[in-house]
Length: 227
Ligand code: 6PG
Image 1: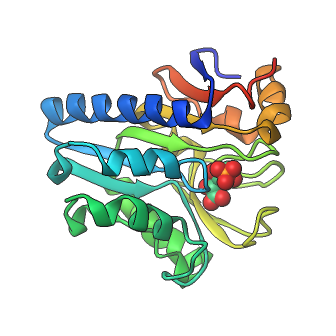
Image 2 (image 1 turned 180 degrees about the horizontal axis):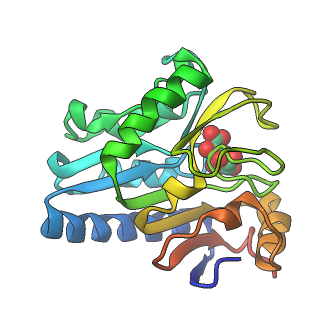
C-alpha cells in the first residue's frame, strides 16, 4: 500500500460523493488560481457517477477545465457502456467546459490505434492536477488488471483479455496516472472489502501501483472499509 495515503472513511456512498466533490472543486480553484487551468482525469465505472452529478450542479470556472479519461472500453462512441457516455450525459453536457478541452479516448478505433492516438494527448497534457480512480473487486484500477503485463514506460496501454467486459480497452498507464498533483480513489460497496484489505495488507495489486509524489486520498464508505 502507498505509504502516503489518506483514508477518508464515510458512512454512505452519498457521503463519499459529497466529500470527493468538495475536494475536487477546491483543487480546481487552486489550480485555476495558480495556472489558469485544471487538468482532470475522469474515472470510469459506476462509482463516480454520483460525484459527476454533484459536480454538474456546482459552480466552477468550467472554461478552465481540461477533461481526460483514465481508461475506456473499445466500444462504439455512442455505446451505453462507454465511460465517456456516462460522463457526458451526467456532467459534460451540463457544464460549460469548451469542447476542445474535452479529450475523449478514441476507443472505437480499437486498442492499438486508440492507444497510439491518446499517447500524444497524454504527452501534451504533462502533469495532471487531479486524477480520479475507482477500484474493482480484484484490485484493478482504470484498465490495469492483475497479471496483465505492459511496457512500464508507455503512457497509454492497449488492453486485451480484460477480465471485466468488454475484453478490449485502453488505459492510461500507472506511470502517467501517477504524474499528478492530486489523486483520489473512490471506493464504495461491500463487494470491495476483500480487495481493500489485500491492498492495505501490502499485496501487489494494480491499485497499489499508482504512486504519485504527493499523498493520495481514498474516499471510502463503511461498507467497503472493514479492516
Ligand atoms: C472501467 C473502470 C474500472 C472501474 C472499476 C470499478 O472502465 O470499468 O475504469 O476500473 O473503476 O471496475 O467499477 P465500479 O465503480 O462500477 O465498481
